[in-house]
Image 1 (cartoon, rainbow, N blue to C red):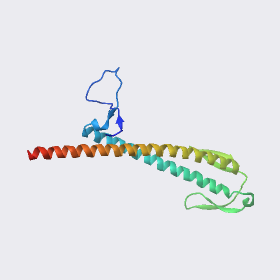
Image 2: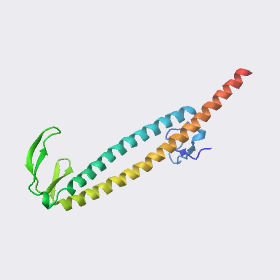
Image 3: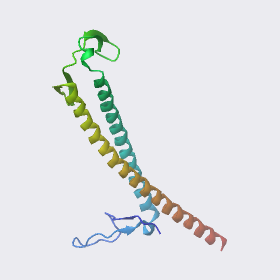
Image 4: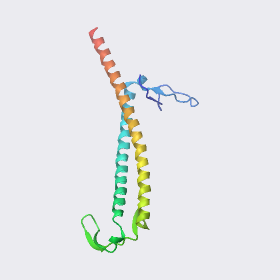
Length: 170
């Protein structure tokens, strides 16, 4: 007896459009439907997992930017440094610690003080972390659903095997 229930969009019976679809306990679904449901839940889980990894990378980039901004102090103003043009090409330059350019996305940049930029990255980290928490919860729910479906599927397959063995013995 599993607690997972679902609403089948396609059922064996044709229902009138005025009737609402009722949740069906997964234990009542045939093996074929359980396999389809298992595949859908697995795909959903993998999609959530990929999105979660992307959000974690974004959070790490924002945190990395915050750490770099910590070095932007008045004592570092006009110090010589290397400025990356590509991953392997640098040119000499000088730090100007009174203003920084932050990438807002899709080709937009904003000039801000380091303190304003710190606040911006704090907000972005908080926003992304909230989304990570939401997706983690959905991922756990999808994983629990997947495990319940797999358990019911195993039970049904084992019951079917036992029935076939009993029929062969007769």
